[in-house]
Amino acid sequence: MSFLRGSENYVWCTTSVLGKGATGAVFQGVNKNNGEPVAVKTFNQLSHMRPHDVQMREFEVLKKVKHENIVKLLAIEEEQEGRGKVIVMELCTGGSLFNILDDPENTYGLQEHEFLLVLEHLTAGMKHLRDNNLVHRDLKPGNIMKYINEDGTTTYKLTDFGAARELQEEEQFVSLYGTEEYLHPDMYERAVLRKPVGKSFGATVDLWSIGVTLYHVATGQLPFRPYGGRKNKETMFYITTKKASGVISGTQTTDNGPIDWARDLPPHCQLSVGLRKLVTPLLAGLLEVDPHRIWTFERFFSEVQVTTSTTAVHVFHVNKAASIKVFLKPDEKYEHLQTYICEQTSVVAESQILLYKDKLMLNEINENTPGKDYPETSAEEPLMLFNKNNNNVSMAPEPEIPKFPVFPNIVSVENDASQAKTACSVGHVLKRRVEALCAASVLCGACVARWGSLLGARLARVAARAELCTRTGAGGGARWTWPRPPRAPARLGGARAARARLAARRRRRARGAPRAALAARGVRRGRGAGALPQPAALARQGQDAGRQVARLVAALGAGSRHALAHLQRRAVPRAGAHHRGRDRPPRQVAAAEGLAAGSCSG
Image (tube, rainbow, N blue to C red):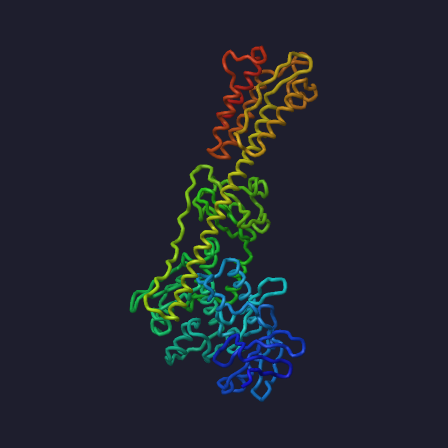
């Protein structure tokens, strides 16, 4: 018996099965002329028993659609040996979304970036169908294919249009198609429970299937799960029709037991808290059964557009050693960023200090900069969040880790395979947890280094400014210098270099500052050319510098208050102090007291 079959331009092997359905199977084949790999869909005897117009419908739909998120039709040819027509399509080497979810790595749902890709591509494909007045009627992960582009990027595509048909916006249909776990409750009642319900259905039945599919992609599980699965059909219908608005899942864990309803995604889901806040209302709208609350396709497309157009801002919360994600809409501003951060960390806006690399975030943007123009962040280069009123660091509570299965004493190949798959799934959860903790450790070290660099640079600038405000020197009069400014705290990046520069600058100026430089600094001239500033003026300058120091320390948090105390000790003159064998001049005392007073009052 030969396993090779073919048409005029294509050949395929019946052992290379890509998928099977009720009406046919899909095989991997090649183009006879150039060797290009393709997917070939053949039809079985059951398919040929359908009315001729129904058989031709899939061909007509595929000819009508042409979109990057719909599997491309290459040819429709007659199979040799008179077995009927075959559909030749592009080959999606990444497999179906169902097979991807069946991988132990994705047992608890796809990673966030992959979920967003599925959401965007699925929506784009559905929009193209609705623009052409088409309804799919069999949306599920098994009918969404992963295509790997030449540059390595991924595109998800809709396939299997055997149940698709043309349907206007207000038009209804009565024929039954679809997979029961993804069926709208009204269709489930007729198709599965076989109840003679005189209802017709509109294009919005696809929205329910999209909602179930997206929940499955996000969590790795179906949203509505009766005890016993497909066997418990009545409970399945009860769960889907009796749930309250806003409920996105219902599960039954024991026979005839209660239903556990949920309005949020489960904790093991790989989506970040920030994205869950956007996705949960979307799922609630798609999985609505109340006829007065059911979404339209326009509403669905609009909500997805809002979600996919957001800017993801990665933030590392130092106090909890935890990474979070904030999603900003294109026109949202800094106050919205602070609000979203507060929702996830409980750090109020007034206490937030955000660093971007080694600068304050507000040095990179202003408060009115829209979210779409924010600098790019990543998990490796996030914004760093400090709490100016809390220096304590404690790990955030982690969600419970799934338990490894208990292996029974009875040996069974089927059960062992299932147990091994579950164990691999738990292993992947632990692997992701370890990777997250290692990344947090690296980011904690980076936070300390960047905070130290920022603090050292700011204190060095304040010290330099304080020196310029309080230091005096004249070309023709008595010369004396002030004590050097306070040193920045030890081990701060750049502090040693800053002190060296300040020392060199003092030595140069001690040899005599030009009078023009003194005038440029606003030093009030006295009676003679070399007169020194008056004590009152120096006191005011010292107070201004002191207030600047106080404001800086207040902004940088309680951890820097020792720097202020150090500055005050160096600035306030001691009784009987001498400098270079001379009594400290009254003007110096006035400036120093002003600096200390200004910092205290500030």
